[in-house]
Length: 189
Image 1 (tube, one colour):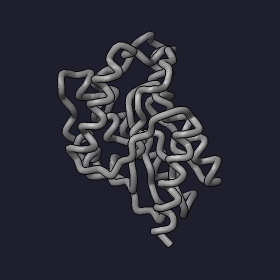
Image 2 (cartoon, rainbow, N blue to C red):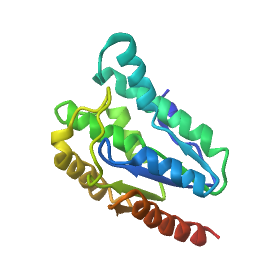
Image 3 (cartoon, rainbow, N blue to C red):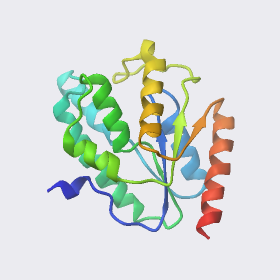
């Protein structure tokens, strides 16, 4: 039953855009997928939670986290089969774990935690909070950006995940990410 949260084997390099809300992850994911003529894995939670908000006027609750994790990894596994080069992931289960702990008194479902720590990626791009805040129906922590950024960075450090900090404008972030991905692709050859 728990297998639905596990990555399936793939031949591609996987990179994750990782960080607090409203830090440019989706924009950069799309840019990178376009640049490499590859696929990107959208953030499943966005669609799931927007639907919940539209239908019930409710935000994320602890019971939503496992369905979100299941949907995210299912989408990732499906899209990983469509490329042998690079898969750009707009998020991963480790991000869901950080949000769970930040929003729900430091707790995380043991199944979510297990797979957040077991699933692996070649590189994380940690997006800094130097982008303008953009409000929407789901974003709710404009005053907590520093604390949220620190929670994301600490999670990467604590779990010894390889990461690059992305700062600056869209062009600077894209250029930095491309240099890093090019190195990964060269090493794969």
